[in-house]
Image 1 (cartoon, rainbow, N blue to C red):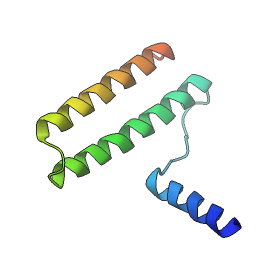
Image 2 (image 1 turned 45 degrees about the vertical axis):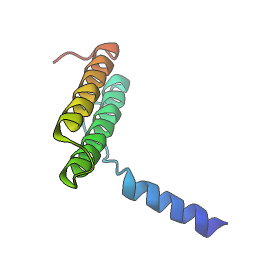
Image 3 (image 1 turned 30 degrees about the vertical axis):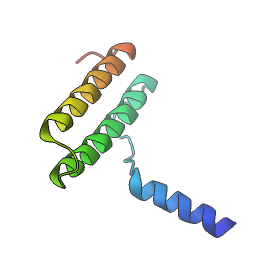
Image 4 (image 1 turned 30 degrees about the horizontal axis):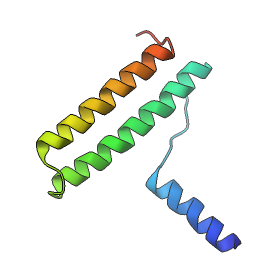
Amino acid sequence: MNQKSDFLAELCDFLYPRSPYYGQFKPEYMAFNANLQDFSQRVNYICSLQTSGKLSPEEAYKQIHILWKQLKIARKQLEITS
């Protein structure tokens, strides 16, 4: 059972890599960083699907645009200004 748990943890780390946050410590900054890393990972998947021909360029654009809007909303909710 422990080997299976280790395997799943390693697989999750491989599929969803996370980088440590080195910026100014504020909870809202850390939350936004997590959102930004999630955005980056999803865009990477969409680009890979489009490159392999499994997703049309138009659909890839639409999905990335939706993710961008979600990221902007998250930034506003966390009250982060530039």
